Figure 1 (cartoon, rainbow, N blue to C red):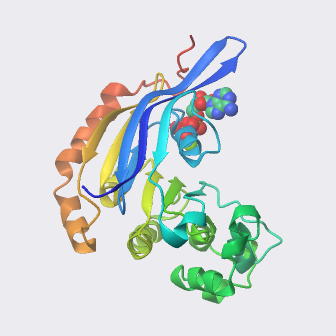
Figure 2: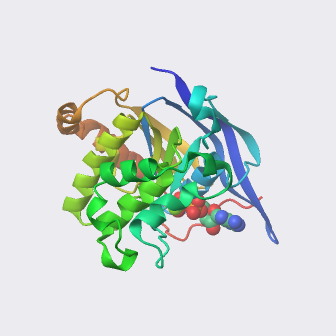
Amino acid sequence: MGTVTLRVTGARKAYHGTAGDTIVFRDVDLTVSRGEIYVLLGPSGCGKSTLLRVIAGLESATAGQVEIAPSEGAEQRARPVGVAFQDPLLLPWLTVAENVALGLRFGANRWAWTAEAIDGILGDFGLDTVRDAYPAEISGGQAQRANLGRAIVTRPRILLCDEPFGALDPRTRAAMQDWLLGIVRARGLTVVLVTHDVDEALYLGDHIGLMTRGPGTIAHVWNLRDGRDGEAERRGALREAATVRAEIMASYQSDVPIDANAPNWVI
Ligand SMILES: Nc1ncnc2c1ncn2[C@@H]1O[C@H](COP(=O)(O)OP(=O)(O)O)[C@@H](O)[C@H]1O
Ligand SMILES: [Mg+2]
């Protein structure tokens, strides 16, 4: 295991409501080392997106801690965390290049704005040919790449992705998974990625955490690799992952309430 980049300890999130406090998640612990991908699986409503927002600092935890290892040198001024939400949320009146550049135009990131930074992202993300196109003119895969590009143009060390490939067809999705692995390697990113797809979790995840409801917590963790395997090893490991896959499916069945509308705990 390498240097720990992100550590969440005893995290809990509750919202106040008229019927009392609703606990979204509780007792969440996770550790991700530099260069690793931690995949969060879990049924809708178990608190995955809320957990990502808490890690990103967009919401505070009710209890517990989110620790991000301090950065060094030039990285120090960069925001440590970039977030790509499930919906690409590109601004329709801006071109692809302008959407990607958006993160560099404001506040803390203004110092990092350079045409090279944006050209670098557009090149790495295969978006050169559509740089002047508007969001309505590009494919779903391109929109999702622009979304991820905007999240990492600020040079964060940690990338949080919420079901980034959920809306893509299977072939585009597989290509995007390989592409993401390449980007993560090339940029030394540490990733927390939410998905509903067990095979995607097995392919991308160095660690897989299964969140369950009632209220959400990480009920099982599978430690598969340490972030160094290449694509061939990943494909190979995927074939050998039948056992883990069976364990994940069994855990889903035994731990997850069948009722899709099952409420969170109310205290
Ligand atoms: N601001 C909020 N106020 C009250 N409840 C919320 C708020 N945000 C999320 N929740 C509740 O937290 C639960 C988990 O939501 P979410 O994190 O979106 O789950 P997931 O991403 O796993 O589907 C849901 O039941 C949702 O209604
Ligand atoms: Mg969600």
